[in-house]
Image (tube, rainbow, N blue to C red; front, side, top):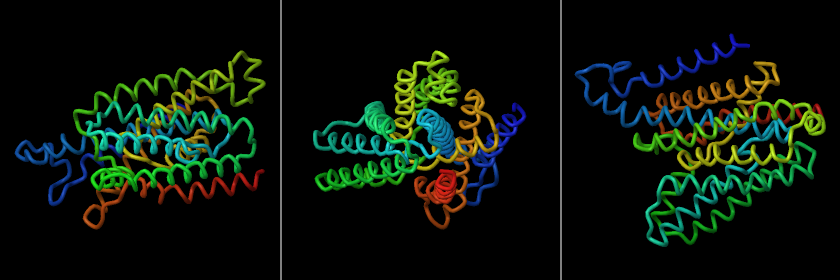
Length: 325
């Protein structure tokens, strides 16, 4: 098992090195290491470090959030974006941005993060209540999609009443971007990220028990309802953090945990959490690399890129579960 972790870690490091060393314009690879090229060093510090950092954080956080949801709901099609949890963050951030504009208040990073977390938590609890009544995985998926559509409609109504600057800012944010984070924001993001990841790993034992089912887990001493509340809180914190600083990013939290289960072939969440985080971070950094490669031709929004890569895999997983139903 640890050999697979080592391979995942090596892949993670290699993708990071290729991405940070990718030449900008006519520069050479790793041009920021040239002491004479001060411009390349400034580009590296101001833009590339924050971009790669938030790519790692977002991929790690969304993948772990997806794994927690899939285990808790016993549904391999669960994920922050598919079930509408990210949409809840989307709505709350929209309300925060528009409200601040109307009141003439300055929007703080922590305020947006809190709003995104609250929105994710509200919709997470709603999904939890619905999942208790709906046992069909496909039905739960459809409910999540309908919630996302409902939230999008409300968001569009809010946008109709907003001023032009707020609409433009929100539209750009809504496409998703890994370039909105500054070097000064890294400490705040890192603290919130480490808190969320730490809480997720503390849930390893109850998650391992939940794989057996709710009744066997209860027999083993797991407080199922309490564990579900903890999971929703952690997922809301991680999904809210990513949504606040990157905009809505779909499919990563759904796809990566399923790929990790197929590759690792284990139900031990100690291994699954670590592997999901590493591979999820690698996927997001790879997306950064693709954005840089296509930059001379077009600018690819991160949300559109993850959708292009993830939609075929989601379709495959959906058809697979329908056949097995």
